[in-house]
Image (cartoon, rainbow, N blue to C red; front, top):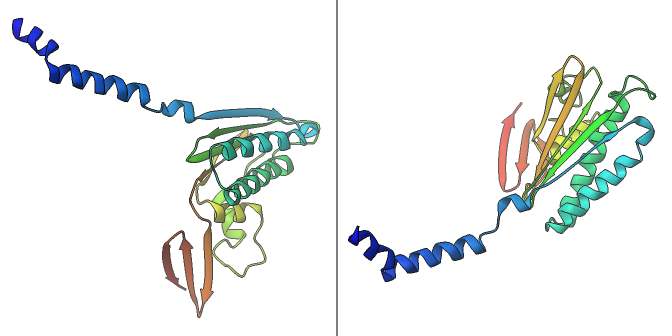
Length: 195
């Protein structure tokens, strides 16, 4: 017991305890970096989705995302909302789109859930010829998948959810075709695929 008391009052122990307390005081709480934002939209509320998008852009701007990334995120959110409004409602009078965003200084995760029958995301991306840089079939989802490869789908018989994650600093996918070779550029990495 005496040894334990000596340890508690030793200079080394007190200095270590002070360092730990200072680290805890100065440590940025990662949970404070997370902002969650969500809303439900009927077709008649379509214009309100713009407010949702503007709020998301405002938050990432406050978190230090550069203007190019803000533009990319705005494009992604617009396209995913448009897809839900166009295809995700049984009619303009019926249906609801639920949207949510989890925003941090390093990523934004955005999802929409609608009542649409859904579609096969991978098949749709192939139909839009995502890997053909010269294609005139590229639509919104193909463009979104070029900005960020993290686009996913969850389907149930009555709901279709599209989830997109855009990471800060991740550059869009660039595809070139030269002499029958497809070249993929992502950030500083290059991948080559012979046809």
